[in-house]
Length: 119
Image (tube, rainbow, N blue to C red; front, side):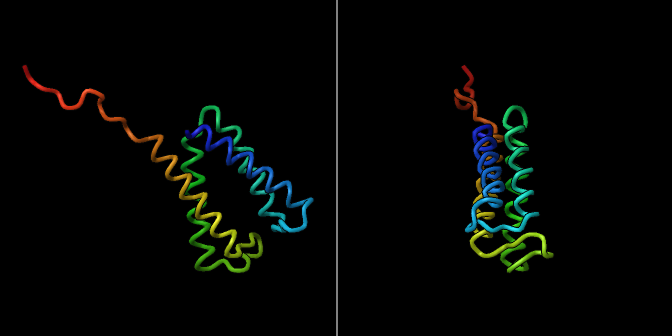
């Protein structure tokens, strides 16, 4: 599941970052678009062996960006990243999904036989 998350999120981030330079309605600031491209390429790379860690970092960064966006970020954060409400909501959803994926991937499975019984 973490590998699929890493690959899917990676490709979506790369596509969104690249579309920013060619499609008018997606007008992110260039720094935001470049960050998406770099984070996406890291996700594609991480899908092979580091997907769980990537999910954790996407979760942490996504939730932090959402909190910053909701409390301090409208319309831009330090003039580098535009954080209107719709982008902040997307960051929150992505962050929660990343943390959930991380949690699910690191959760230890219960023993299949149940509790041991003495004979």
